[in-house]
Length: 346
Image 1 (cartoon, one colour):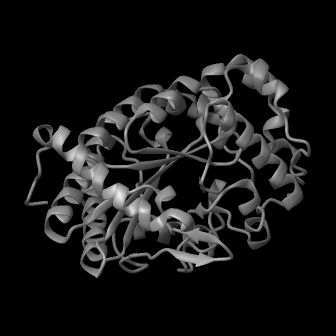
Image 2 (cartoon, one colour; image 1 turned 30 degrees about the horizontal axis):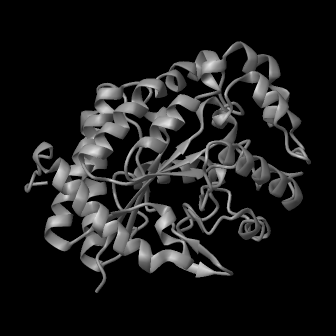
């Protein structure tokens, strides 16, 4: 049985990812908190020898407003709800640059061993929004490739905004150089991405599923079709607020049990969240993540579980990347072994 795989992916969006549902007054502090949370996350991943895939909105990679204003796709999104397009937010973007542009943080990610920079599309493109077309999507990805190339990057992996997986849009990915994407669980609670079946009741069930296994143990396996590899998500790492100790313990227990199930089965445990989830109540959220990573080390020691990035599942190099991954893990372990305290009781 092949060793189990532990995958972490983060949807790095800044305010581009929440502009359709939040205001600067209501959520700006969370986004600004990313400037402190991301360096801390990188240090934590480095210390725990954990790889991560940072699915990054291309617009935040622009140096400033001027470059963003100049870099536009050949075909703009044609959303029926025109107000959700980032191209109508020029005044807001100009007034709050730090909420929208973060090239220095991108550079830190690139420079950190074991971290993959993937794309989250250029504009946080909504594939399931009425009016969106594959042609518009292809133009958006062309811009993402252009801003990536400016930084010496070639994306292999993608996370679709709001987990909106639409089959006709997937056919665009190979021509954009994308081989791997994060898909959704086939359970009814998750298969439609942000569109939760059952309305409010469905959202309550999702929230409860973070504490008790309503949707099962959520061990996943990579799926290959039409030259693309789907590495489905297992669980979302819900952010913690102050005074949520009881809830925190229930969620942590759910995470650990799901990780252990994947490790025993030789499957995949794929954890994801947004850096802005750590923008407030930072210490509480880092304590939860630290416990998850300690449990990963316990599973690595006990069952041979290994940390992987999404890009390592690219079909043309999958076998070679697994060998390189094991080599890198050994090198990182030699460097960092003294700094990691493994909690065998996790």
